[in-house]
Image (cartoon, rainbow, N blue to C red; front, side):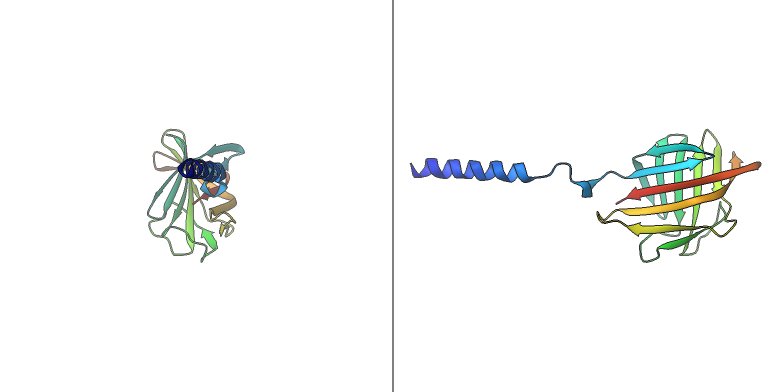
Length: 157
Protein backbone atom coordinates (compact mmCIF):
# COMPACT_ATOMS: atom_id res chain seq x y z
CA UNK A 1 0.00 0.00 0.00
CA UNK A 2 2.82 2.36 0.96
CA UNK A 3 4.70 1.70 -2.34
CA UNK A 4 1.53 2.28 -4.35
CA UNK A 5 1.01 5.72 -2.73
CA UNK A 6 4.66 6.56 -3.27
CA UNK A 7 4.38 5.52 -6.92
CA UNK A 8 1.29 7.69 -7.50
CA UNK A 9 2.83 10.67 -5.72
CA UNK A 10 6.02 10.39 -7.77
CA UNK A 11 3.97 10.10 -10.98
CA UNK A 12 1.91 13.14 -10.00
CA UNK A 13 5.05 15.17 -9.25
CA UNK A 14 6.60 14.08 -12.55
CA UNK A 15 3.45 15.13 -14.40
CA UNK A 16 3.40 18.51 -12.65
CA UNK A 17 7.09 19.05 -13.36
CA UNK A 18 6.82 18.35 -17.09
CA UNK A 19 3.65 20.40 -17.45
CA UNK A 20 5.48 23.41 -16.03
CA UNK A 21 8.34 23.25 -18.53
CA UNK A 22 7.79 25.96 -21.15
CA UNK A 23 8.80 24.55 -24.51
CA UNK A 24 8.16 27.90 -26.21
CA UNK A 25 10.51 29.83 -23.97
CA UNK A 26 10.84 33.32 -25.49
CA UNK A 27 14.40 33.63 -24.18
CA UNK A 28 15.29 30.84 -26.62
CA UNK A 29 13.94 32.93 -29.50
CA UNK A 30 15.51 32.34 -32.89
CA UNK A 31 17.64 35.10 -34.34
CA UNK A 32 15.94 37.36 -36.85
CA UNK A 33 17.24 39.68 -39.50
CA UNK A 34 15.11 42.23 -41.30
CA UNK A 35 16.58 44.60 -43.83
CA UNK A 36 15.49 46.99 -46.52
CA UNK A 37 17.46 47.61 -49.70
CA UNK A 38 16.12 50.15 -52.19
CA UNK A 39 12.65 49.88 -50.64
CA UNK A 40 12.49 46.05 -50.83
CA UNK A 41 12.07 44.13 -47.54
CA UNK A 42 14.02 40.96 -46.75
CA UNK A 43 14.02 38.75 -43.67
CA UNK A 44 15.62 35.60 -42.30
CA UNK A 45 16.23 33.61 -39.15
CA UNK A 46 19.52 32.04 -40.29
CA UNK A 47 22.49 33.46 -38.40
CA UNK A 48 26.22 32.89 -38.87
CA UNK A 49 28.92 34.55 -36.74
CA UNK A 50 32.62 34.61 -37.46
CA UNK A 51 35.08 36.98 -35.82
CA UNK A 52 33.46 40.41 -35.94
CA UNK A 53 31.12 39.48 -38.79
CA UNK A 54 27.47 38.66 -38.29
CA UNK A 55 25.63 37.27 -41.32
CA UNK A 56 21.89 36.85 -41.71
CA UNK A 57 21.24 34.62 -44.70
CA UNK A 58 17.91 34.71 -46.57
CA UNK A 59 19.21 32.67 -49.49
CA UNK A 60 22.66 31.85 -50.91
CA UNK A 61 22.58 35.17 -52.79
CA UNK A 62 20.65 37.38 -50.31
CA UNK A 63 22.69 38.09 -47.19
CA UNK A 64 23.05 41.05 -44.85
CA UNK A 65 26.35 41.49 -43.02
CA UNK A 66 27.04 43.59 -39.94
CA UNK A 67 30.83 43.82 -39.94
CA UNK A 68 32.64 44.87 -36.76
CA UNK A 69 36.21 44.86 -35.43
CA UNK A 70 35.03 42.17 -32.95
CA UNK A 71 31.64 40.81 -31.89
CA UNK A 72 29.60 43.85 -30.82
CA UNK A 73 28.76 44.35 -27.19
CA UNK A 74 26.42 46.65 -25.35
CA UNK A 75 29.40 48.29 -23.61
CA UNK A 76 29.80 50.24 -26.85
CA UNK A 77 26.20 50.95 -27.71
CA UNK A 78 26.75 53.33 -30.64
CA UNK A 79 28.87 52.43 -33.67
CA UNK A 80 29.82 54.69 -36.59
CA UNK A 81 28.66 53.20 -39.88
CA UNK A 82 31.70 53.71 -42.12
CA UNK A 83 32.60 53.24 -45.76
CA UNK A 84 33.03 49.68 -46.94
CA UNK A 85 34.73 47.56 -47.86
CA UNK A 86 37.09 48.44 -45.03
CA UNK A 87 40.39 46.70 -44.40
CA UNK A 88 40.35 47.49 -40.67
CA UNK A 89 37.72 48.85 -38.34
CA UNK A 90 38.12 50.75 -35.08
CA UNK A 91 36.42 49.32 -31.99
CA UNK A 92 33.47 51.73 -32.42
CA UNK A 93 33.00 51.30 -36.21
CA UNK A 94 30.97 48.95 -38.41
CA UNK A 95 30.27 48.36 -42.10
CA UNK A 96 26.88 47.36 -43.45
CA UNK A 97 27.11 45.01 -46.42
CA UNK A 98 24.24 43.48 -48.35
CA UNK A 99 24.75 40.77 -50.94
CA UNK A 100 21.83 40.76 -53.32
CA UNK A 101 21.98 38.60 -56.39
CA UNK A 102 24.93 36.74 -57.79
CA UNK A 103 28.08 38.85 -57.58
CA UNK A 104 26.25 41.98 -56.42
CA UNK A 105 27.01 43.73 -53.14
CA UNK A 106 26.02 47.00 -51.53
CA UNK A 107 28.35 48.61 -48.95
CA UNK A 108 27.71 51.49 -46.58
CA UNK A 109 29.30 54.75 -47.74
CA UNK A 110 29.69 56.41 -44.34
CA UNK A 111 28.29 59.69 -45.69
CA UNK A 112 26.38 61.95 -43.27
CA UNK A 113 28.01 60.24 -40.26
CA UNK A 114 25.34 57.58 -39.61
CA UNK A 115 25.37 55.58 -36.38
CA UNK A 116 24.05 52.14 -35.50
CA UNK A 117 22.91 51.13 -32.04
CA UNK A 118 23.57 47.90 -30.18
CA UNK A 119 21.31 47.12 -27.23
CA UNK A 120 20.35 44.13 -25.11
CA UNK A 121 16.61 43.53 -24.76
CA UNK A 122 14.82 42.13 -21.72
CA UNK A 123 15.28 38.56 -23.01
CA UNK A 124 19.07 38.83 -23.26
CA UNK A 125 19.07 39.18 -27.06
CA UNK A 126 21.42 41.59 -28.81
CA UNK A 127 19.66 44.01 -31.19
CA UNK A 128 21.65 45.85 -33.87
CA UNK A 129 19.71 48.71 -35.46
CA UNK A 130 21.10 50.47 -38.51
CA UNK A 131 18.92 53.38 -39.70
CA UNK A 132 18.62 54.25 -43.38
CA UNK A 133 22.18 54.73 -44.66
CA UNK A 134 23.60 55.33 -48.11
CA UNK A 135 25.01 52.23 -49.78
CA UNK A 136 27.15 51.90 -52.92
CA UNK A 137 26.72 49.17 -55.53
CA UNK A 138 29.50 46.73 -56.45
CA UNK A 139 29.32 44.00 -59.10
CA UNK A 140 32.03 41.33 -58.88
CA UNK A 141 33.97 43.69 -56.57
CA UNK A 142 33.93 46.53 -59.16
CA UNK A 143 32.29 49.76 -58.01
CA UNK A 144 29.25 50.87 -59.99
CA UNK A 145 27.81 54.35 -60.54
CA UNK A 146 24.59 53.77 -58.62
CA UNK A 147 23.71 54.02 -54.96
CA UNK A 148 20.60 53.73 -52.81
CA UNK A 149 19.67 53.40 -49.15
CA UNK A 150 19.54 50.41 -46.83
CA UNK A 151 18.59 49.79 -43.21
CA UNK A 152 18.36 46.77 -40.93
CA UNK A 153 17.38 45.36 -37.55
CA UNK A 154 19.28 42.23 -36.52
CA UNK A 155 18.44 40.29 -33.36
CA UNK A 156 20.43 37.37 -31.93
CA UNK A 157 21.66 35.82 -28.69
